Length: 271
Image (tube, rainbow, N blue to C red; front, side):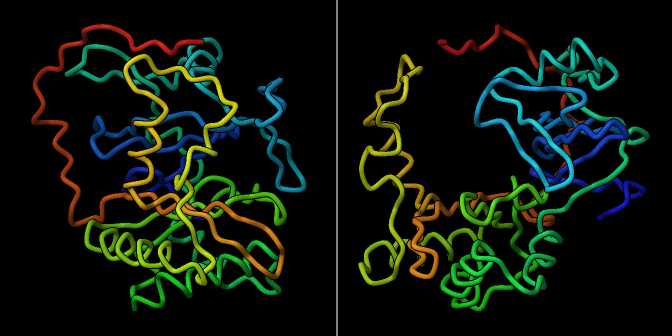
């Protein structure tokens, strides 16, 4: 795992504190000596959830994932030291100071380790097939890709977890999207667009007021980054995502150039 000494972070990198709280780095612009984050997981000794989707384990320890605004309220109530001042906004946001970082987890490093894992379980075997059909087929460099979520933190379940990838850089993203379009159109490829129809949202409570389910599905489909890979070896239809993140050369931290952000109001979820 990476050391926190050189705090060079970008969106979807992960920070672990001494208490074992796991944060996701949020965006690219941060106050000096700190990082704006989103709290994703906490060990069971600190937080437990009744949400059946929240449980995570690495085989030795149990963690729970935060959903909606649970993480925000948890930090405000129990760990206010992880609220940092955003001067242009004039308000505190969830974040971690450099001195409070115990460990940094890099998605690109995690992917490399998983690729080197032997013997591979059925999810890692499927991951190899997906990468062979996309990244390596295009001749792209593995260092420009990473994993997030359960694969990054060692929480994944070989029989149930998805394949969540990161694509670094616009150029790599466009090449991946173009190839995915071809794979979706080839019925023999094993790949399909997750949002080819509205099945991903069927049975779910719709909480948007100004966006219809049909509009949502249309937008998700056109992005091309949400797919499904049918793995014949395991007999599973595995969700595959290629989430875009800026490459280092595309990132410009302009925090010091922002003089003021005017806060208008909260955005509230319809529950």
